[in-house]
Length: 294
Image (cartoon, rainbow, N blue to C red; front, side, top):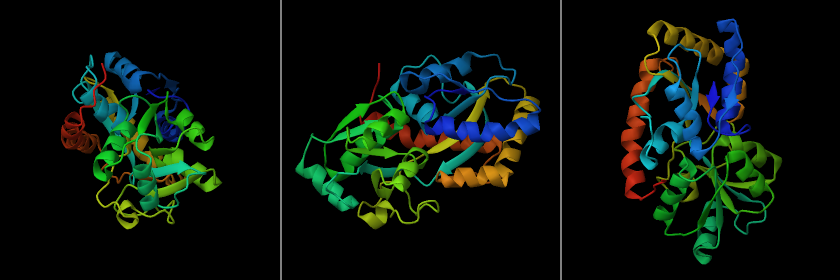
């Protein structure tokens, strides 16, 4: 399975949890290869070019399979060159976090601080053109603030610098953010969703924190190259379904702020429809913001 981002990031973490359990259904292990670079396009492109035999899987997300199609001139199509296997999970949005020494203690205070320091704050992102960058542009447009987005080679190294106080804020998935919030090494300001996360009930939603409507997408899924036989996709889907039914797997994902997809949502056809709907929702916004990577 190709994870198109560095080890330790959300795609990698979730992928390892699920594939570890899939081996029981498949009767063989799944080897994960982290193929990072160009915001996930290098690894995802490898899957698009792979043999359609079920032996090369793509672990991906909103970032790799939605955002990249709008900002890069890709040699593959993020929708048409992959066959859906299963939606694994979706978080209740992302978490807006900041370095521990920030003078703000809530979201309104953070926005006020950003407005008082235009262009001075540093926001970490997993890379140029990442979903986090898109969400940062979205935040600036809603609040009238300006800050510099700093690209890293993945979410994990960006979070390391936030903990060290080298950057000021991040809009990151709960997978990466919640462990540090619980450890007390960073501050959490809000969840970018309509309801609080069961894994972090003390963090308010953006509606509660004073920024209504700032909702972001964060989900994870599995694909194979287009043309993979339906019987093979069915076998892989069954392995994912069995993995997601395992109480231990569900508990680990819940601890990371993930809501496991329902049995209906786990079907290949459901992922295909959801993937298409996300592209139709976000591409116009991304293109209107002028985000483009050559």
